Length: 247
Image 1: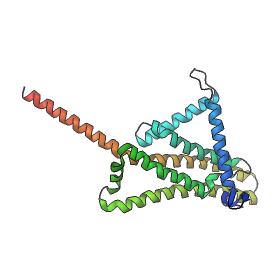
Image 2 (image 1 turned 180 degrees about the horizontal axis):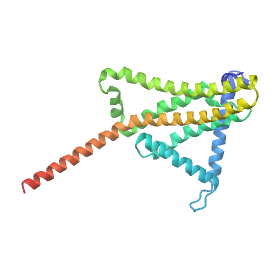
Image 3 (image 1 turned 90 degrees about the vertical axis):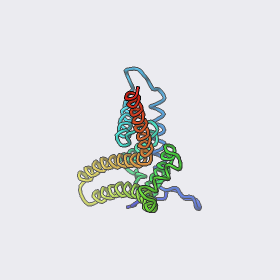
Image 4 (image 1 turned 30 degrees about the horizontal axis):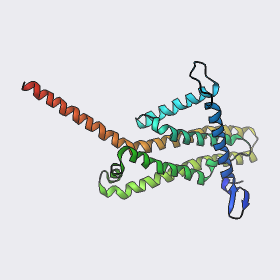
């Protein structure tokens, strides 16, 4: 039994290797690309929608609602990134029920790559929202002595994202394979169904944690703006009060 699809080499030519992780990652990307093209090529604004468009609109609405709840911000600028992460992880995990398919999320290299995408994207959103100086100032809060701890926190949460997703997907695949060899078919089928549910939960957790990290990088700017607005309103009220007291 292969613990990771990285160990299953399908083709090799010199230093170039094509393993199961790369192959199945390409298959998932191709499947999502083709499905997106088929659904979006004939979008309709009428009352009657195709089944694919209805599913797509429902999915987008749900993701937008989750982003809005997690970040307390408008979801438009984050929808593409968060939605892509969720769809890729969820599709990879759901396809594990197909015989012979090994989910690329069961490879530490894939989950590390996804976590690195989050690691790079979070500061990009933060810098875009606050500016470079404003974002870097967060690492000195509440005191400059916290700088190394804040940096370690950024690295550790990236590592946690990768290891959590890899461990849950890999363990589910191994348990199902072991049970299939020692007990009748019925029980592994139940475990496989539970594995699909776990896979969807892991996709949801990964997407939500990513949104929480982005929100923490951008919310400081929102708080600062709100404080400025409240200060301006307070100053305006005081000015109006003075004008009323001294006509």
